[in-house]
Length: 215
Image (cartoon, rainbow, N blue to C red; front, side, top):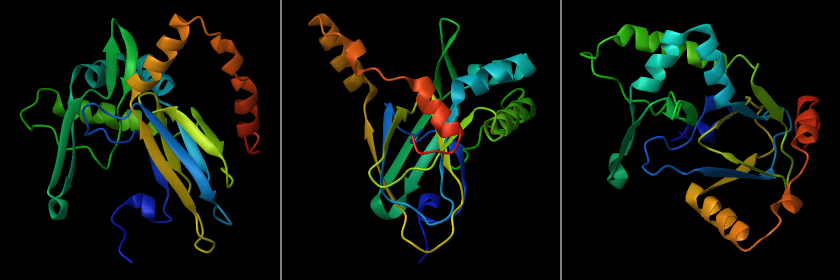
């Protein structure tokens, strides 16, 4: 079978954000594990904000380029008459603070060859890519049937380890608009709802994840 998407293979998938070619983009992403591979296939979550902060520490000029130049992203399916395009910086800032990360090698369209600092820009892209794939900012989780992972698609990049063919692996994905969540939270706060009762100890979740246990 010829897969039309890397996700439909058993190959490793590097850290990325989804649907960068959409405007508005899906702010919240979910993966529901229905069945898992016998060996390999762990899900990887990489904190894009931390990667960007490390980039700024290591190379301020690279940070300037990735936050100051909008990169074009594209998805095209001629058979379905679909062409989606959007441009956004890899590191989107608001009032000097990181607001959103957009990074996807497979959906990135080429920049204009006339762009000033073109080579420097792609060196910055490559450095961001190396940091994202270094493992220093990544949590590895082996999702089991019934597990549901939910994360911010504007901050957390996700990926997957390669896995051995055999037992079928099925993770079903879905998206939510970010403003749906923001609206629900704002309405609850306006009604005096105590949101802390919904919080969990994420430090405990991270600790379990880093030890390889299912969180």
